[in-house]
Length: 104
Image (tube, rainbow, N blue to C red; front, top):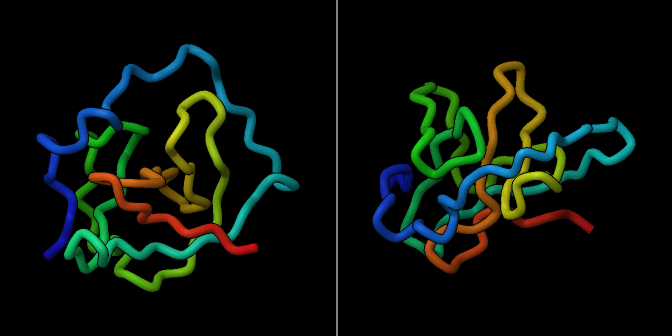
């Protein structure tokens, strides 16, 4: 099951976005892996902005095990800005389960 439409359970992720603006520096880029399998999902759709309701219908959505790079948002806690040509976002957790796992 692809987990991109569980809006009813993601209300804690739908907080209003901060008026603060992130400044993403290359030195702050982090590596991470997507794994949403604890929620029974095979992957997650990209988000066009840091909101659970902002799914981006793109064929290259990441499946579990996908290695990603990006930045942890300070202006939008609980979100990462993915280093992708289309500027996509991902939530760090969904329905109480971490879906983004940071490399150490």
